[in-house]
Image (tube, rainbow, N blue to C red; front, side, top):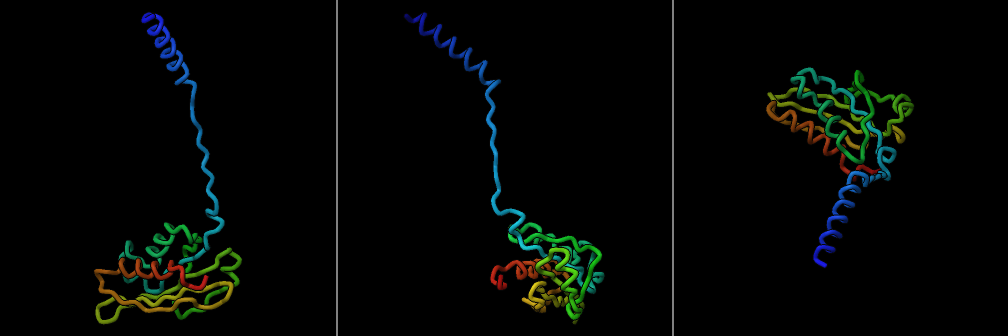
Length: 158
């Protein structure tokens, strides 16, 4: 009897070993919502951004921050720039499928960097946010991250 149990265990072990190479699981993940439900936003180069080091360009940092958002989809706008006082071409951005545009200007005052920016709703053709923020030269990146946080805030009327 003992020999029969050992034989049965051996046969089961061989059977399991032979099946382990054959059995493979397959997982399918479906993302619901995803890219289609993200709000398309363009972040233009800030006027005066050349005053800061390349790795501290405010428009680039804002775009990089917003790319990590699950609510926003950054639309390619390289080479485009607009200061906060400039008129936004709403028709152009609407044709690109852009819902929102970030524009701005950076300048220096009393040794600090001053960023004026606006978040423009393309469809409504109005500025949803328009603010000025100031930081010392050592905190230019922080300034850009603060602007990205404000742009990303859910209470902007959408």
